[in-house]
Length: 243
Image 1: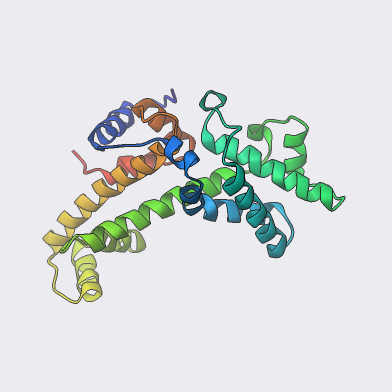
Image 2: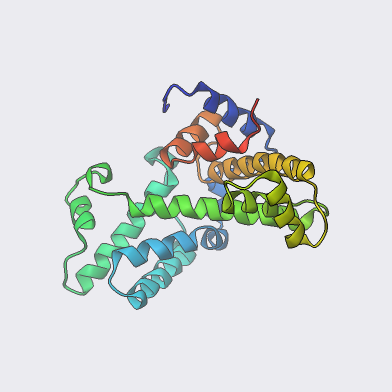
């Protein structure tokens, strides 16, 4: 397990995971290719755009890849082989390498190194797939928070958290005024702070849920490892109210 002397992170993740009812794992996603497309297509599209030279090639690659997924599913994946995102990255890398071979050209440098057996961790610079996967998880969490607000009368979780992110140095009074303008009704500063505290808790819960659904197990230790690998622990830690 990733250990950085922050035992509180383990406690926080465990508390959140234990409160999420009906938490699922990636198996439901792998078995349902339509759900897979909705969940990961944006990350795949952006990753492919960094691997080939034109938007047209990237879009063609995306369509070919998704078609194969619809037709064949993920029959080659086994949980014991590692995290699903690693398997998916390998499948995408193979698709990119096949694309370059068809053009009788060399792939980009990091793809060449991985083809030669160099671990991704030894390739200079940030891993594009990890960055896109992380961005996709955060975007889906924000979308889930917005849906929660729309479904719940009087709930302003997405509104207040977005304002706090967009105006990190603003006072509660200023943020409350901005929220009042946004929703068309007066909101006091104390009411804004209460909504913001609850919004951070909800965001943390939704992010843990999102990450858990990409893993072979909903075990809190595995969830924490994945959050740490993706540098998402701070979103959980800072999303919870201070004690």
